[in-house]
Image (cartoon, rainbow, N blue to C red; front, side):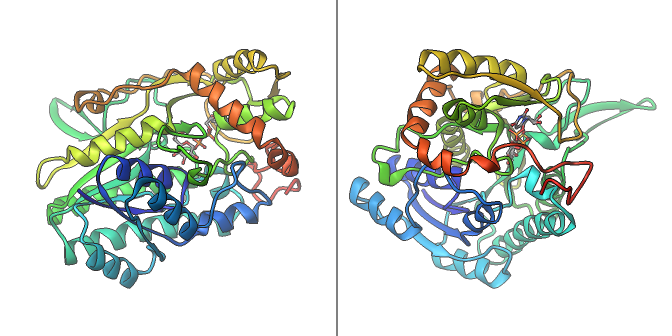
Length: 390
Ligand code: USQ
């Protein structure tokens, strides 16, 4: 199939591109390189040394013998989206080109507005351009499990049957997000549902959990490495705990540590996305997939990282730091996630094995972690935008 990736330079985007190429798909991608700039803005960089896009694409071609078409461009510009679709004529478009950090969106009003405006604009541009140029293609839109929040009832995959005042209906499950970033994804989901309703576009809205890992089996050469963020703004919980353990600084479990989320490895995330692409929804269907493997509290994750770090000869420790976020710290969490399994998804790596790989990789890049040590501790406070720590 011909697959286009918006956000091909990102953590998941690049890993997905080489995975699809290895599986025989034709891949093209577009990226504005804004994540590289935004990570620099907070004084950080990727722990893994990553090549510039053109050099990456050349390395992939040399290693796999297939060319990935790469275009530098911004999906918030409508004409760019239309001409990219016109030039590439994909069967599926995977939209990963959104601002993906909750803390970044909480820095101040400028970052909140930037997150919501750019995220919502890129998705709206896409559905309009798809309708205009290629209405039959499959749009795979990256959303987040965080759209649902942490209600005290089970979470379905997108929709649920509800009885109210004696009448029944199948309705979108309520969204109760926890950051301006997560709310941008909720607004996107509403827009995707509406684009499907009015124009019959074929859309998969992926509710993905927290992704972890430094590599996938497709990263067979250091030149193919994808980025790995570990600072307080761009790093996610499990990746940060591994980086902290390699540096010998305490793992930052926020608050009581009972915050529970669904987690999935990078290797399995790209596997799931490939399965979603290869098994599109029916014509005219809007489909929601919850994409994660298992749920863990951050407290449990820190203990798991602690055990693996010990085996790896590190000296890990765990700290309960004051929670910079506004969120439930002890709660019920039971989301459904059967649809991808029904489509053929199988988990390929245990969490323990993956943690070992992350630590081995990060030990090799310890100097790069060390150089940015000062941006690891939390400083973006949900209650105090533009706080004094910044
Ligand atoms: N947390 C800690 N210590 C840390 C960092 C985070 O205890 O050092 C806690 C947070 O308070 C939160 C949980 O870990 O309760 C997850 O935080 P995170 O930073 O790993 O993930 P989050 O901000 O939710 O966002 C990440 C990605 C985002 C994706 C989302 C999936 O950055 O793009 O949408 O995971 S989900 O969490 O399921 O919404």
